[in-house]
Image (cartoon, rainbow, N blue to C red):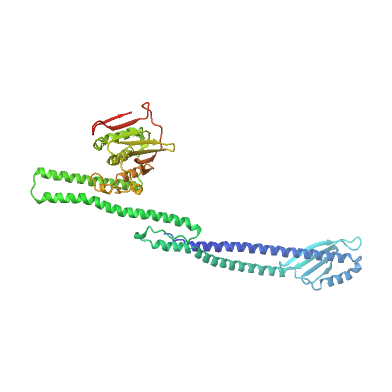
Length: 471
């Protein structure tokens, strides 16, 4: 396992490295500038001395005046121990030489030049002027060590200051960590206090608080889910236990035992249905996707669902009507289940003698909306956001319904997610619940008739009389 990297140490180290690099660059620039300045000054000094020597040599006219020239040169070099001159005539004959600095070493700067002979028809004189630059070299060396020490000391100061600044800058993060550590299951929804946080941390605080809100909702939903599951399982289990104990309490005939077993089978089937629905929702929550295949007509698929619910529609005294059509790639089995749940839900709450509309509406964005609407009691606005939660019932009086355990609309929402869509609900003059689905192959439906395909199931003259057809 790799060791965890410390942000404070990382920032401090990089600040020190950048400080050292910056100060080192400045020191190098200062050293180079000083060296170039010394070199320019030395060159200027040698050039100035060269012109003076030329002038002194030019003042004599004959060889007999050479002693006078030597005397003038001796006077010239008095007090200039760092300067040296070697003057030679024809065939390298030495005419003048100063003790001057030693010829050995690298601290000498030389300049050689010719001087026209002051006497007629004489060859030019050769002069070599030397300058001892050891003092400048020593000064540059001291400057280099001083700059190096200054750069290292500056880097240490920057590192220490950077570490202190980073520590100060990370104090808000530590405060957030303390607030997060104080969160417990009972107060997981409490938002973090970001009022004292810096501007750069505000988006993080906002996103974290939004996550806490979702987590709190999920935690409360899980608590309610556990209680609802226990409640849903307790009733049929109690019934099974009671009927079984009663059947075993005394001798019974085969006919009575069959009746008990038949009643128990109904409860067991209800338990199996509940378990299967919970397993389906679990798979959907884990990200299982729909198995898509081409569905030529959603209206035909909806008609099959209406046919399946014919008896329930008959008993409720309501009709059903399919409007619109589309084709695309869907999981037809899942869509039948979603439409069946929506239609069963609408049938339970629709007013007698009214018509339930199943609307299919494709749009230009590559989506199709399937909605089932009915006329009946409106769903209060505070319940609409929660009707797709598991075991949630807006009408608490129906929560013990024998055939409804509160997972129908949750399954509808899960099927929508498996198709990359969402579930929606509106309740105004009519209650409309449906799903919006994404499809990779959405095209206008084939026109088999001269008008939009529609299937209608409507009440006949007497209760329970229906006509099924299309118009």
